[in-house]
Length: 241
Ligand code: NDP
Image 1: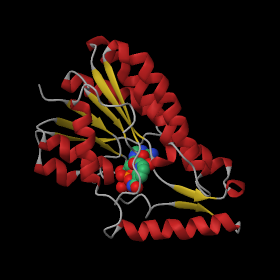
Image 2 (image 1 turned 90 degrees about the horizontal axis):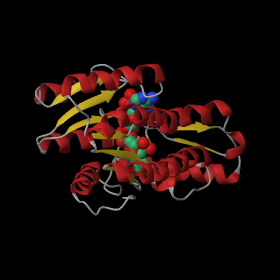
Image 3 (image 1 turned 30 degrees about the horizontal axis):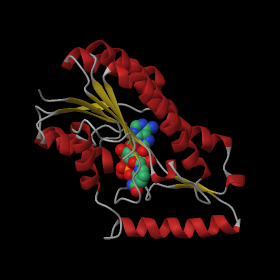
C-alpha cells in the first residue's frame, strides 16, 4: 500500500526533495509550508499525489486541527517528517532569549506538537514512522552555533526517548543528521551582531558554506531524500542517519 506522508517545510530544500522522492515512489504527500503558493508547481504536476497545507509549525493551535484534517481526508499518516527549520549564527554572549526561543519554537516545540498530534493515530494502527531532521549540529557544536545546536541537541535527546517509547508499539523513528547540503538554509541565516573573535570566524565560515551551497561542495538534498526513503523501507535501519 502506498504511504501517506506529512512533510513540514516542504516547499524548499530537504522538504521538497523528500516530497519529490515520495511522489516518485507513488506515495501521497501532504506538503506543509507556511507561505501560500510555494507548492503550486508540485501540486499542479502531481494533483493526485501532492496536497498543499498551510502550516507554520510555531502555530501550536493549528497543529492538532491540521493533523486531524489530514487523517480525516486520507485515513492515516504513515510518515511524519519534522523538517521545517532555519539557521542562526551568533556568539553565545550576543544571542538573545528572543532569538533562542524563536529557534526552539521551530526546531523543538513545533516538532513536539506534531509528534503528539500524530501519535494517537499511529498507535491505534500500530504502525507509522517519525523522521526528525536534525543536523550534524545535533551531535557536535561549534563557535557561533550555540543556539542552533542547542535546539538540535534537544530535538535528538527527546527523540531518543521517543524511539524507546514507541518502538515497541510498531512505530519507527529516524533522526537525520545532515552535514552541509545545497539548500536555502544558509541564505536565510540570521546572525547576532558581535565582535567576538570566534564569532567573526564563524560568520566567515558560514558565508563560505552559503557560497558553497550554490556550487559543487555541499551535498544534493535529493540524495539525502533517497537515503531517508531507503531507511524507512529497511527493517534494520539505525536510529541516527
Ligand atoms: P531550507 O531553507 O531550504 O528549507 C527550510 C524550510 O523550513 C523552508 O520550507 C521554510 O519555509 C521552512 N520553515 C522555516 N520556519 C518554518 C516555520 N515556522 N513553519 C513552517 N515552515 C518553516 O533549508 P533546509 O532544507 O536545509 O532545512 C531543512 C531542515 O534540514 C532544517 O531542519 C535544517 O536545520 C536541517 N539541516 C539542513 C542542513 C543543510 O546543510 N542544508 C544541514 C543540517 C540540517 P520558508 O520557505 O517559508 O522559509
